[in-house]
Amino acid sequence: MLVAPSILSADFGNLARDVKAICDAGCDLVHVDVMDGHFVPNLTIGPVVVESVAKAATKPLDIHLMVENNTFFVELFAPLKPRYITFHIEEEKHPHRLIQKIKTYGIKAGIVLNPHTRPESVEYLLEELDMVLLMSVNPGFGGQSFIPSVIKKAARLAKLRDELNPECLIEVDGGVNDKNVGALKEAGVDVVVAGSYVFKHASYKEAIESLKV
Image (cartoon, rainbow, N blue to C red; front, top):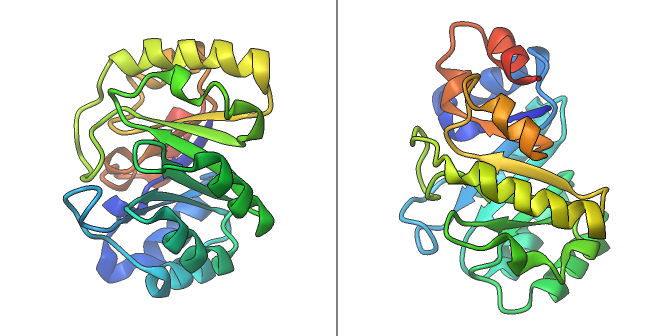
């Protein structure tokens, strides 16, 4: 299992320190939640702050857009050269076009599904995708409880993925911890995002290692 700690749960007064610490502790990706206050009821960070995160990180960035006007935000963050940019299918009228746009920057493209969105909604896009991110909480705020039905949803998505594009990663974000990560792995999940679980743990290294099942 790959582990992508979400900096939404970091100490923003010491953000560079925390980003360096999770990288030193063995994370695989640094997950960056970008919220615009419109698509979700929260406002987080823009490209100036993420540029500082990128300088502090020794692991690739995984940028998750929770925004309206996805194309605008892709153009803002693409110059930072993250490994992944993911966007919500619920907000995008032309997802195939946006996937191609992200890839023109040399960045891997992914789609995010809210808890209520069926995995079959990406069936005809899977061959073009590098990642599908399943939300296991309602997007907008950290520290929420895991929605157990995402395990069944991940298993359904994994069947589609294995048939259409075995190279596409499945990522799960929200309420992930050492108690549910085993079931996610069994369902076919490749990457977990963990914010509160990592950053509130006494040892980032122990927390990350406990998720690498």
